Length: 452
Image (cartoon, rainbow, N blue to C red; front, side):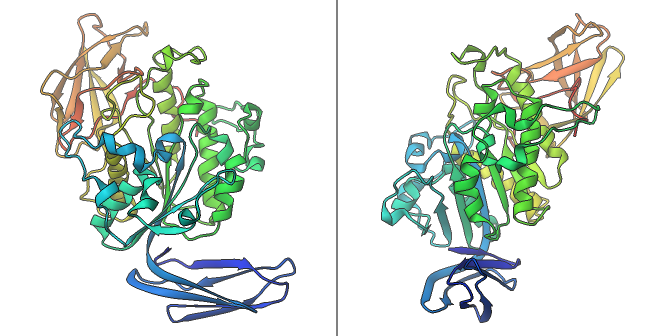
């Protein structure tokens, strides 16, 4: 396995009540006694990253020896099918996308024993014995592991040069509620506008189902942070603001479980998909997905959170499981490098809306995360921009880059007051920064932005 560097490392287990237990690792010896219920725990002092394989000896009336332990960075990745999406499914998607170079066939060539993986399987699954516990990220163990998680680790390793440990706990088709401790869902969230939402748990979704079996048993294994890729199942329900509060509850409750309110939490903005044409669309129109993106982005009001947009990683909006998971993992790694590890020279996002200003008969849009400049991916005029006047009727707008800003205009809207970009479930705009990252969809008339 990999243990988290530069943090206290909890080691815990069970024994007979009152039994003396000692833990020896890396020159440290910790001793304790099991409590009346037989539970015991110790904490190892913070350690530096190490490629040296070490043994841990846990001794009570019997002795357990854990071998080949490294010290480095540990991340937990969770969510639904796009996070669970296994390397064995992935290989056919190892092709170039939008000018990006494809990865090697890692399923057959991966050979880095310093990247370790732990597949957190559901209890009702029957894993084969060789797939239990920690493994090196190569060969058979890699076959069923999260492609996003693996490529995150691979890219992060190239930047940090320390052992990387990845824990994957994801379930296809899962809503967000099963990943939250059931008692934490008994909330009536009060919004900043004074309104109170109905209790979150009334939406069903088996609150706590996967938390109990896949998350709680991991606590308090020392981590650097969390990666999250989920939302499609809740988007089908046409959830927006209620999802935002559930997402906030998940982030805050997981951080509380690990007793660290600053743990990084990075998530993926779900991909463009034709929800409005799906059989179970729950009354969707083409703007419901952008509204869901908006709900996801409310989590950015919480500290140490960040997100990636993947609007340019979709070949067909009829595919709920787009390929290019290697690039999703890489983009999350860039966020971690920049935000969690202080590599501020690493560009990790496309343009993000900052503010707008009406100038004569145009709207001027300013962005953050512009990298080395704004541009068009294909050299064609920028698309998926629209503006509206006081009547609220949006029409397509001409978008021009000027002084690293976007200037919007339309002869049909002589007095514009608001703008939107990518505000459609099928939008895959050509608007990027020069580093190749897509701009994040937005609307300047966002009614929810101040609710957290």
